[in-house]
Length: 201
Image 1 (cartoon, rainbow, N blue to C red):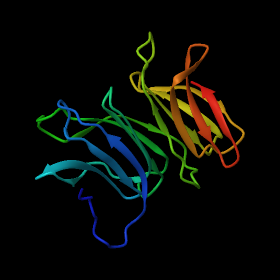
Image 2: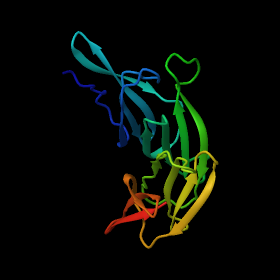
Image 3: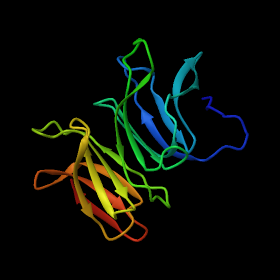
Image 4: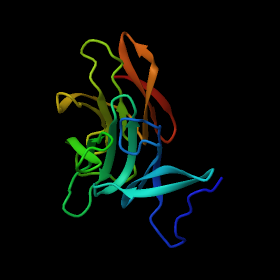
């Protein structure tokens, strides 16, 4: 098996890597990986050539100082979170969608952008919380806001902040827990420097 080998020149580090499953209806139908460096967002699409597996890299049309990415294959939504830099004075959480296979135009189109506050001294990983198919169960974005010390919850379909709650520690990483509910509400795990917590959203 031949593995993708990028040029050996100094680049900013990779902050996030997500599996992109094969799909007959989506751009990059062969699947591969969604890769985020701090300064670059791309897809490594799997290509099979004479029984050898290689990866073709395609840059995605978003710019930012990236801190994390998430992908949900059921909704085909992508979450990319960026720290403040240059003309952008706050955290940004950009929800996008991959184009259908053979659709003309960009392979990734923005759906909605949610904004945080300006303070961001560390890399914080936000997460996409998929819909579980229930009533009033829209996909969510959860992110930690250092300036207010809260976990903010944004509703993608309603395109607004719907909830926020104070936490005691800086939450460095958030991850959805699709098989765990608390009183019918979806949950996310939050990792700080010293603790692992579970929150209902």
